[in-house]
Length: 397
Image (cartoon, rainbow, N blue to C red; front, side, top):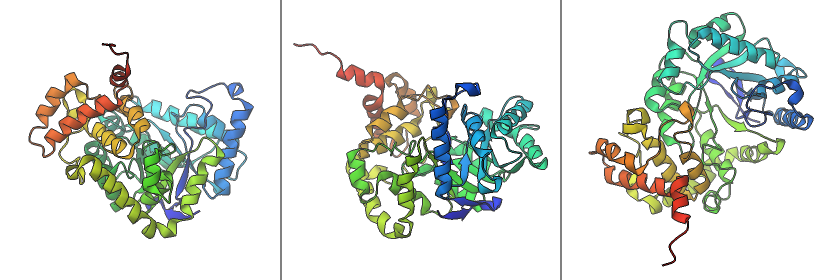
């Protein structure tokens, strides 16, 4: 394992983090007796496999159902100095509820202190307000730090850049969990701004939100050869020293293997990445043309400033990469979450009836005609109902 200084926390962070969202028994708190012995054995095997490979950072959250409780049963068997522990607590309207949720996490985890506490899911203006208001989540987290129950405070966010950047610029946090990887380039200024403030940077979901690279298309495999798509994405992220660690949402011990194999090729990054990046860029150019080659997202407003809250930026990102790289499963999965994901995946689809006002607002943008076509095509390609209508029964005449 390789380690990097995690910003001002001074922690030596492994380049791979064991994210614990996917190996819990249920998404809700449960009676301990409900947890199957086989499931708990798998969870313990994942954690021990991580430690054996030097992946000594475990990242969980109050919102991960039974994860904290099940982890706590394993953590009680380990030496506390052998691992870095992070949990995440969401901001709440009632700040005392933030403290109650944190207390529940500590009880489940069975520790006196967490190394890293992230205010979790600061994804929209409501979450920002509940975090930064007088007596809010940040103030409560600082009090917990004074009490010695938290060593370092950060936040996690899926927010668009206009909301993400001001949070970083408060200079109130020691680290941040955010999205940035090959198919999510637009968040780079946030990564750079965090690094400039000596904040640790943890990359969220590089393999799932990053294109469902655990089940890539044949085209994506060919474009990324001799690496697997996941290994390519790992090296792409690690190539930037601003990035501290990548969260790997392991569901079984073997889920680390491909990333450990990528780590073994870290010293080859400078020779491996350029030809792969050239092929990927060529595929984008061939599919979409030169207009989409550079910073296409500039000048496009976030979903909450779009008519009907159509998430233009996210739809274009899905369409751009899914179509060019054959990532149809990723495209359909992400597109059909729009309107269903709450503040975790906000905004609406590009329904034909909603596009008029959206396109009127985009008038004058350098890509306006191309954006209009892209939004319509994304809906046709990836919307469940639109796809079903196209493949439905046809008139035999």
